[in-house]
Image (cartoon, rainbow, N blue to C red; front, top):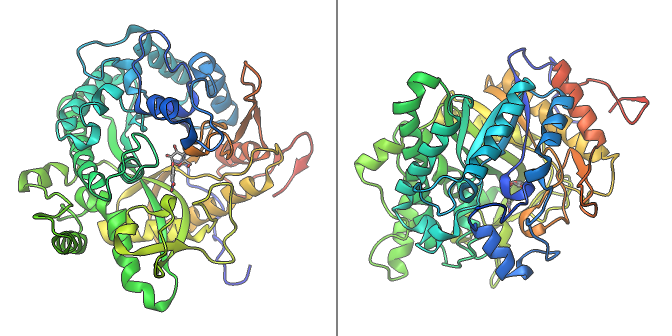
Length: 489
Ligand code: PNW
């Protein structure tokens, strides 16, 4: 325990909520069921099977399109307070536009929500977890400023359908991954535009988020009293050496601040240092204007304050150092920072996982939340994702259970020592699923899924038993049974 602080109280307060998360494309399957429209992930994996490591796709995945009752049962059996899932935009709106609402698509989510509520589980619903209608991509997708209108229209349909029953909404999951991986060639739509498209996307996606937020605030909040925010993915960054402090701060501006400062800061707009940096760099590159498009004052005001809490997805910490001559920044690690001529490393004491980008450093979660508090004030934080990847071979996944315990301890420390207001915690993920370009090679599930069986049976791992015990007792040191003997972590 050298140098590692232990939380003095090992209990989460009474009102603290525990949940688990999934996303539509990663679990549902039913990619062309009924009148569902094609999404950019359907197109990406069908047209370019080689982008996925094991050449798999989400056509069937966990087949939650048929097995959603089992999903609810798993959440119930763990005793969780909420289930975070996402809605597939093209399943509800097959044309992408709000001119036609799919009856089967809208019924699917209505049934799921009803089943959750009947079991005393709160639905936490993400509007967009990366499966844009292909029809809208054909018109430019997130690079087209009109997407803010299309997203607001979609949000209205969803708020009308489910607003009476859903009280917590996430507009966009991880805009940095949507824009920076989507527009640098890796994730759908697989467009490589050298830090040009990514910034058009950044701007438009922030406006889309804000439009949905304002719509809810004005027309739905008065009657439904729900809350709305966005989930940001945060890599925590540390300087590799003392010489790398300045680059590390700029790296935080480009990867954290770009999607947080416009919404959560008192001033709004892009982080000033970032705006200056990209404007100067664009000029040197011969562009007549900054590649990072500016906001009007009116847009700054629309976006500023468009939140009811901070939605935080966090997994890992990386070190920042300058690129060596001729070295390329690892593409999964870019998170916008390739622009700065830097790349990510790690430290020997941070264990690796099954995901290339992911090293384990529990303390990073506490540091991240303290940083958010220092930058943006005393926000209420809902941790909307945190979890661990392995090869999936073991039901006795001790390292995953350990990961949850160590990261949850840092949540307690943040609350007790730094007085950070954390309102809840979400495990990623309820069950093994389609892990994007890793396919089924890396697994994050509390439950194992047998993808060779057409019924896709789900089995709890040790980590599920541990997490369920914590959720039930609010005690970090909760004991639990696995598989039939009493064990302690
Ligand atoms: C998040 N990276 O994705 C997503 O919200 C989930 O859909 C996903 O399954 C989970 O984290 C685990 O990966 C990420 O390359 C995808 O840095 C890629 C990266 C980070 C997060």
